[in-house]
Every structure is written in C-alpha cells, then in structure tokens.
Image (cartoon, rainbow, N blue to C red; front, side, top):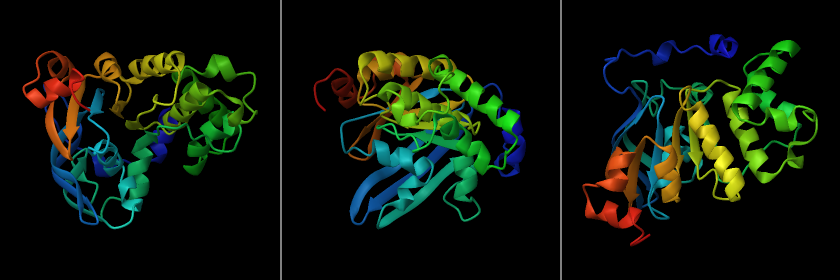
Amino acid sequence: MNILKERIHDNAFSVVRNENWAKPIYETNGLNLWYGTSHALKNIELAINEKEVTAIIGPSGCGKSTFLKTLNRMVETAADVTISGNVTFKGNNILGKSMPVEILRSKVGMVFQKPNPFPKSIFENVAYGPKVHGIRNKAMLEMIVEESLKKAALWDEVKDRLHKSAYSLSGGQQQRLCIARCLAIDPEVILMDEPTSALDPVSTHKIEELIRSIKNDVTIAIVTHNMQQAARISDRTAFFLNGEIIEDNQTSTIFNNPADTLTDDYVNGRFG
C-alpha cells in the first residue's frame, strides 16, 4: 500500500524519537473542551502510542466519544464548541492553522458505532478513498481493494460479489467493510467509537480478531463500554469520568491493580 503513501506527503509529520521508548503518535496536553457552557473535557493529559491498541472506557456521557472526535477534529462540526490546550499528532499541533484537516484525516481513519457504508458497491466503498487521492489506474485500484478486504478479513466472503451493493452485507460484514475502507488509504491511526456495540457476539469476535491482526500496522484507539473487550484487545486503557481522566496505564494494571478506587469500582461493575 506504499503507492498511496507516496501521494500523501508527510513532511509536516516528521519527528525524532528515542527508539528505546514507546512512541506516542498522539499527545494531549491541558486539553479542555466546552459545548457552549458545558465543560465536556477537563485538562486531558494522554499519550496514545504507535502500533498499540488504546481502549477508552467510562460511563455514558463521560467524554469518551468527544475525546475521540477531537483527535481527527470531527468535534469541530458540532455547534458552539470551544477548545483550549494542545493535541499533537507526531509532534505537530492539529488544532493549529498550519494543520489542514484534509491531511490529518488522510492519516487518521474513523469507524463509528453503526456501520455506515456508502450507497455504492462493495468495490467502490473501498476504492473511494484512493480515488479521492488521485489513483485512477484500474489494476492499482483492484490491488488496493483486494489487499484492504483481506486485511479486514472480508475478502473470502465478498470476492465473488464485489459489484453488489454494500447494503447487501450483514451488519458485521458492513462494519468490516468500513474498516477496509479506512485501511485503503493506508492510515497511521484508526479511531473506533464502539464499533461492536450494535453487533452480535460472532461478529464482535471477528472485529476483535481483526483489531488484533492489524495492530502491528496501524495504531488503534477504541471507545468501548465492554470491559471484557477492553481487557481482551487493548495494550493500554484510559478511564474517563465526568470529562476527566481518572487513570491510564497498561491494561493489565488497570484491570488487575488499579491505583484509584474509582477505577477499581468501575472495571468491577460497581457503578456505571
């Protein structure tokens, strides 16, 4: 998938790091966000490391999805939003005027709670992003579509009906198609906002297997209400409550030896 990378310049994203440490691809410092007068995110300090799965947990209304949408600036589409602090992607402030949102979103894909395939064929859903970025060669597009569907563990199920409507797929297949659509632009990060909450257990298992299979190639941040899911698939976990981060650490620590009693109570189902 290097062809597309050559078309999307990332000179603005170069950064030198110590190879002996986990590499943060995103860092937030003193991040505050208001919807009108409602203070939704409060002094968020969080690093999301490259080639890891970071789970974001917490009860409804605690700021999880707002935080996720801040990472690709989708939150800015809401009315009356005010943001302060810094959010850096590979060392560059994404909230600054020097960071075009189009470039950011070419690096950062997003998968939503409800599958949202385009009203197009399976093939055209996956080929859409590469076409937007200037790829028109048919053989090249076919290669990208096949590779993306294979990475999304969907190729064998759809290879004989690529030109059928995406709406002909099951809910779980549609969600994997949306992930394939993200993968087709060769992103560095995929943000997932409760991607399995509307799916049955079998489809949920397939999505979790998919996350595990691609995490060596792409960084994933996932919002989930499912504590078992967070424990199964993530490397690090951040616990949000009332717009604040109560605790973030290695997932094993969060679930087995949390530092804060609120974290312990939440992951053990005593509230939320």
